[in-house]
Length: 328
Image (tube, rainbow, N blue to C red):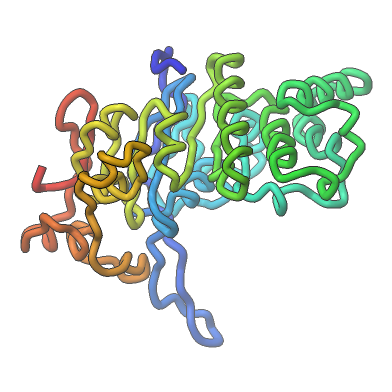
């Protein structure tokens, strides 16, 4: 996997996604759930950016805003230099041929009434790619690319294992030859042995299709380390740290990142027994009523009074290592 690229494929700036909370017969809005609150990052061609954080931090919402399954509240999304933030639905058809999504659950993301060949070939029909024998040949080729026998194309989803279903999901994502694939926790519902197979498959595909980029959303830090060129850490709707994968694991700067990494098991029993374990106090605040200032300050072990008053900007502290903390 190479970090070299010939340009930026995705540029997200100050992205916000608020979900209204309504009450009463007239459904009057009384508040907002701030699922994503000012996320900014860039993704280069041929690069994998890992987006990590605990459940409810907004990482899946970011992915769904990028592919415009959600209409962002505000901010800007540039894809291949084109602003798609407020693009009309009919204009998004062309964009979605170049942005694909691999869903988290291979059990519910496949239509049980369609056979595997129809599922994989559906994007070809939607985007009018291939007709007749060309269509059949492309579907069979996609099956081979993801390691499935084309004779399986007449089977239905319930006749496949979990790993095979996710391979079908990957084949479907590749069908329209996308430039960017949003991987929304694509291995979290799979057995550990199958997880490794899917990760290896994604890496092999990136080597074969050199300009293919991934936004890899996950909560498993060890998996993200294995596949990502850069990693962005999210907490309660904000990116708190983003840098090169190796730099993040060797030298985490944000207190939240340090706490996350301290919870990842290490195979060496001596290191595991002697290393410092950071246990965060309290619970993750509600995005319906986030704390003032830095959203992490109620649980932070280095927080001061100033942290509750100032919203820390994401700033570069050297060599492309960005962190959102006024104490660093």
